[in-house]
Image (cartoon, rainbow, N blue to C red; front, side, top):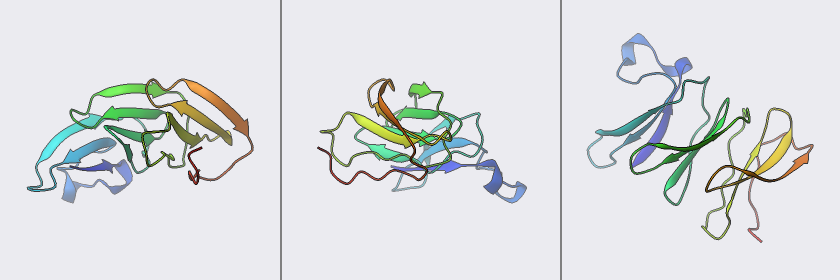
Length: 130
């Protein structure tokens, strides 16, 4: 499965089959659309995948089930940055820098805040999962 985001700034009449502001999962073998999830928000960032969940940062941070496209949780943290998701399932956090320049560690299962720290202003990168 290939997951991508269709945003208003890249959607035009010539390419009208791609609706604006949706997360879309496409079958990698034949190109058919498996599911679409409406974001109803401005220009989502590129999606990040961890295990069976797709995470998208936009006006909110949203977790979406990879199999069916259903929303698992949504947090009211506006972010113009991408998310950082550890490569293994050993970590139970998703990291995002909000527009308020606060680094949030969110629980992967329900989006609750594990901790925050003020100050970072760039997209986070997970270097060591310990």
